[in-house]
Length: 199
Ligand SMILES: NC(=O)c1ccc[n+]([C@@H]2O[C@H](COP(=O)([O-])OP(=O)(O)OC[C@H]3O[C@@H](n4cnc5c(N)ncnc54)[C@H](OP(=O)(O)O)[C@@H]3O)[C@@H](O)[C@H]2O)c1
Image (cartoon, rainbow, N blue to C red; front, side):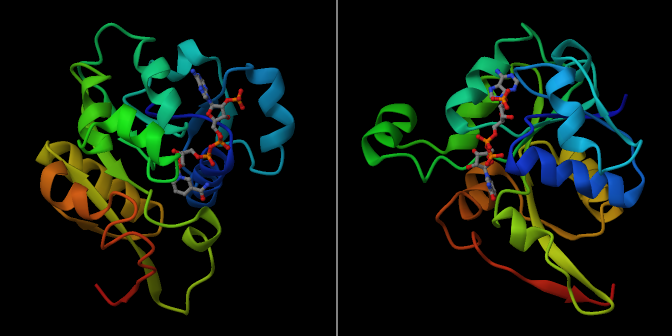
């Protein structure tokens, strides 16, 4: 399996629906196992497959659709994440200020998350909009813009390609310290709901 999603909440389910819409196979998991997932994804068709966490961890490209505070728990599930692309959709900015201060200590959330998946190429993406806005219909010929940031240009290009296949108009905004900073909630590119027309 090439793609997996860890998390069946708002983000995990919405991402799964995008894979279903584009006819791309994806595995999806949570803390409670496949039996808990089947009823959630019943309307998404056969491309979205409920899997165990172990199977989800074998995918090449893994979405961590979990809360920022749970990212480190998932990171601990493998000692070595080499050859994996991990997509960080988390937003830490909605945690209480004292929790943010304790957890981030002035650093960017994706810099911290990258250290929690040693060896992986972390890509920050799909975090800039509430899910209902991400999937809201757009006018004919338009594609919604998503921002993609990574310190690894090859991984960024891979996720730009995937986002295109999922029906978006991705914009690569550079490294985490630069573009990644702009798409960290609540910075300048967050909540920007843009639609691109043409190529
Ligand atoms: N909601 C939005 O519109 C939105 C938009 C952009 C970004 N975000 C960000 O995306 C992240 C996820 O948001 P959400 O609303 O989807 O969260 P959520 O509803 O709380 O769902 C989190 C999911 O993560 C799973 N999970 C937690 N720890 C896990 C572990 N160790 N192993 C496997 N699965 C685990 C949970 O499993 P169980 O179901 O078994 O508990 C749950 O399915 C957050 O950081 C949020 O800030 C959210």
